[in-house]
Amino acid sequence: MKVEILSVGTELLLGQIVNSNAADIGSRLALAGLDHYHQAVVGDNLDRVAAAIRHAVERSDAVIITGGIGPTQDDITRESICAAAGVEMEFSNAYAERLRSWWARRDRPMPETNLRQAEYPAGADLIDNPKGTAPGLRLRIGPAWVFALPGVPQEMLPMVDGSVIPFLLEASDRAGAAIESVVLRTYGESESRIAEILDDVFESSVNPTMAFLASAAEIMVRLTARAATAEAALDLIVPFEQEVRERLGRLVFASGMEPVESMVLAAAGEHGWTIGTAESATGGLVAARLTAIPGASATYRGSIIAYTTELKHELLDVGGAMVQDLGVVSEQTAIAMAQGGAVRLGVDVCVAVTGSAGPDPLELEVGTMIVAVRTPDAVKAKTLRLPGDRERVRTYATTAALQMLRLALAGEWWH
Image (cartoon, rainbow, N blue to C red; front, side, top):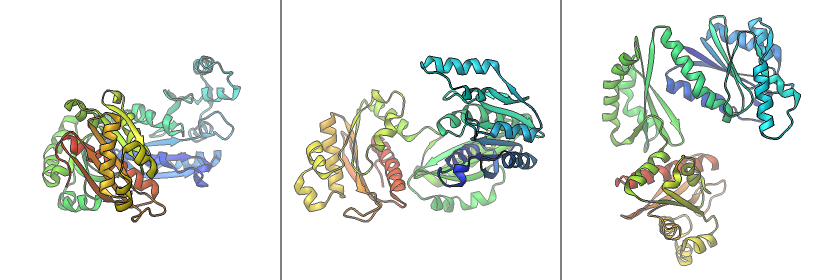
């Protein structure tokens, strides 16, 4: 099953919006074991979008289109699909009533232009949008399936996960070949080092195949097999996975896509411990990751964001003399933040982050980030040298804080 991504929107061509949708969909296709050879971006022009669709269906088994299915005049993806497929536009009275009900529940008058979202190319199935008003579309054009989804990531990604990927996997099975994947998640080494450790395994394997995916300081190793049945494909993966695990050892911390923050909360719950965060350079990003998990309140109590030196002293009891002698960006300061956070928040475990995220250096070179974890058993800190710009450094530091918290809760700490 070859899947192509077509992103619609002049704003993407102008660089006004970064095309994160293609990256997000691409990673999901890779994890699902679906082949993905082409991506394209086209502006809001009916003829050009229709031509791009016709070209895509000639070389791919499925095309996922994002953008251009909203209610405004420049949303022309539906019309472009009609032109590419040679079909007329139809109107769903049932979906129009659904739109009216959606607006009525919010005590707001519905602009009549929203009824454009009830239009669909003849023969298309509507895909439910649980997060918004624009339904997705699924239509067969020649030998290929064409999907049209909203451009808003918060609406589009649940539709990809809940409807598009499952449909494509089922369609692949009906074609006589089951595709199964196992994802091993690693932390603590670079993508290039992981690839080096597994080089001979990678080169010698045809089925299963291996791929490396870097994501926010984690490196995922995806093992994918094809066979007549799902069970047979998984059987092919078993010895392959065992070899990879033996090579990588404790670098592998999980399989599947359970986020590390969920693992942290579960581990704390098993201990009966509560968690708090004390953040400076990350500005609450660690807390945001933890509180994004449903049920986090059973374990997580709260955060202190002490961005200035004065607040580190007032809220976290970080000694002024310590900061003066050792600096804000020091392991001793991070440890004091973790200990002070544990006391002030009344928690058993506290993770603290301080550092120099950039763009200008703070005491030490940009990318120097320090994480400290305090548990009832011990308190330790580690200095990290992280690459990239400010956003990337903060993202990597957030993942590092969660990973070091995971290790501390497991009693393994870190090397």
